[in-house]
Length: 133
Image 1 (cartoon, rainbow, N blue to C red):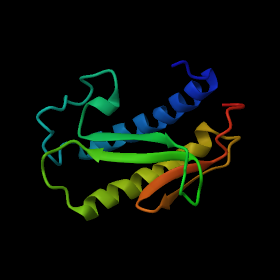
Image 2 (spheres, rainbow, N blue to C red; image 1 turned 45 degrees about the vertical axis):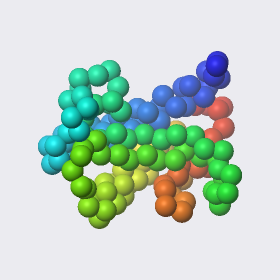
Image 3 (cartoon, rainbow, N blue to C red; image 1 turned 135 degrees about the vertical axis):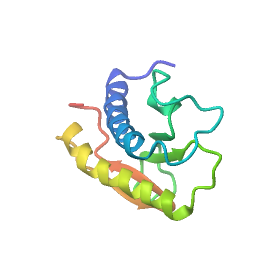
Image 4 (cartoon, rainbow, N blue to C red; image 1 turned 90 degrees about the vertical axis):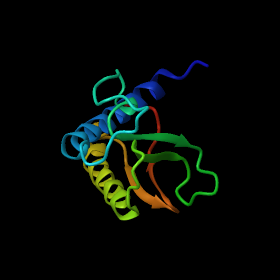
């Protein structure tokens, strides 16, 4: 299925932010938990989502049933078989959100993007228009 070039560019910029955040986490905490046996070591693949302890990204949602409407659901996973305490997962999530609040305005200076907790997830929402990406 062909996608609009501006949508592709928008998501590539967003992925670039997540890749920066991933690098930060991997450098500081990539050694804290043993890697899942089926997971590639950090930098072993061409996509940061596919290797290392952290898998960070976002997926578009139409926002049905959400008070914020359409946006990108922030996805934070740790690729380990170890039991990661919920408070540690929450700390990682909050730090990702902190980075996003700092980096989104830099990557999308003409957009009014916000990130808030939407139920049990964080969501990036606001001006998702494809002009001036």
